[in-house]
Image (cartoon, rainbow, N blue to C red; front, side, top):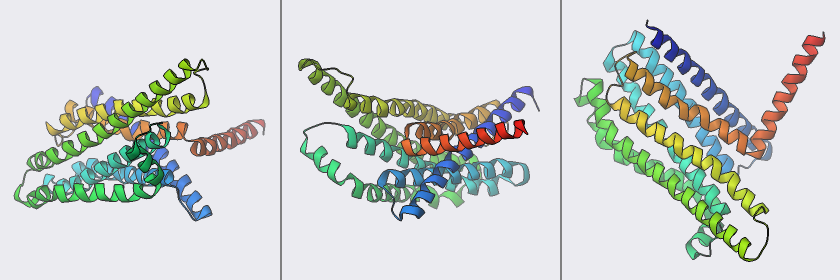
Length: 289
C-alpha cells in the first residue's frame, strides 16, 4: 500500500468517526427530547431525519468499502442503490432545513411568503415526503435497467444523471434561500440607516447567525457535486488516487455539516457543552485522584 493510500485511508477513517459522532449526537438528542415532550417541532423533525439518513449513509458507505475486499463487483453494486437514495434524502433534509430558517427570518411583505411563514410548520413533513416520492419515481428507469448491466461502472453511469440532477436542484434551493436572506438583511439594514438607528439590532444578528451556516453549506454542496463528478469517472476502481480523493470529498459534507448544526443550534449546543463540561470534571477528578 502506497503512502498516499495510507494517508487517504486515515483521513477517511477520521471523517467517518466525526460523521458518526456528530450525526449520532444530533439523532440521540432530538429523539430523547421527543420522548420527553411527546412532540417534535419541524426543525427538530428535519434534524432527526437528516441525522438518521446520514448515519445510514455512513454505514452503507462502510459496507460498500468493505465489500470490495470480500465480494465480487456485481454483489457490491447492489449497495449503490441505497447509497444513492440515502444521499438524496440527506440533501432534501438539508435544503428544507435551510428554507425553514429562511422563511422564519426574512422580512418581506410578499403575500406568498407571508402565507408560507404561517404554514411552514405544517408543510415541512409533507414537502419532505413529496420530494422523496418525486425522486423515487424519477429513479425507477435506472432501477429497472439495473439488472441489464453486469458491470457496476455502467450501472453507476445509469444512476448518475438522476442523482446529479436532484443534487443540483437541492443546491439551487439552498442558493435561493441564501439570496432571499441576503436581500432581507440588506433591506433591513437600509431601513435602519434611513431611520438613523443602529444596524446591530437583534434582527440583524439573527440574519447573520443563520446566513453564515447557509454560506458554509453552499461551499460543502459545491464540494459534494465535484466529488460526484469525480466518482462518475472511476468510483469502483479500488484504492486508486481518484477513488480515494472522491471518497474523502464525499465524506467532508456529512462530517463538517453536523458540527455546524450543533454549533448554531442553541439546544444542541447547550447539551454538547453540558456533556463536555461533565467529561472535563471527570477528567480533572481522575487526575486529582
